[in-house]
Length: 144
Figure 1: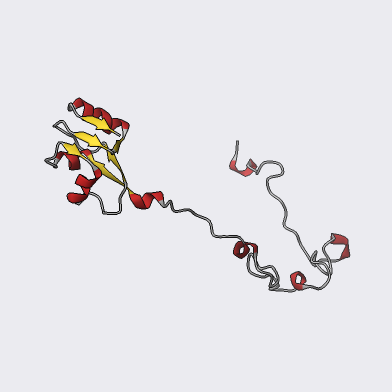
Figure 2: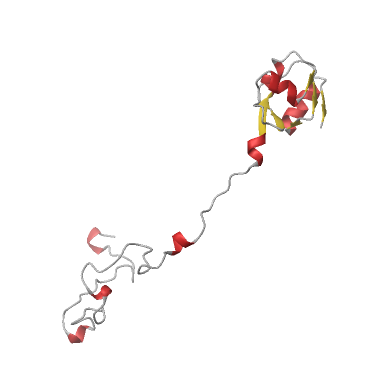
């Protein structure tokens, strides 16, 4: 194989359209733009989404996205934060007293982050699978 014998694959390169080169080319006179109108003129294209003054589709449709209102009343704590508390029985009220969650929180979930070295009882608080096994390994219990 020589460098001077290399060429693109068959059908890979397409010759450019030469417009305005006579009637026989198929793209003479109007150059494939048709007769008159905005698209026939030079610079005659509008911005994307413009519908001739009609309210564009992207503005007619409602905004998308969702922010869960449950997340406003939900919070999470870690095992290392629970380990710092002196109480044996931990409820949401205890967490509020120690400023681990804000006052409007109604649901709390314990995450497996850090470790716990003493037995605690969680009441009305959920825990992840890993956090649950860590609490039970430390002789603690969970009452949901």
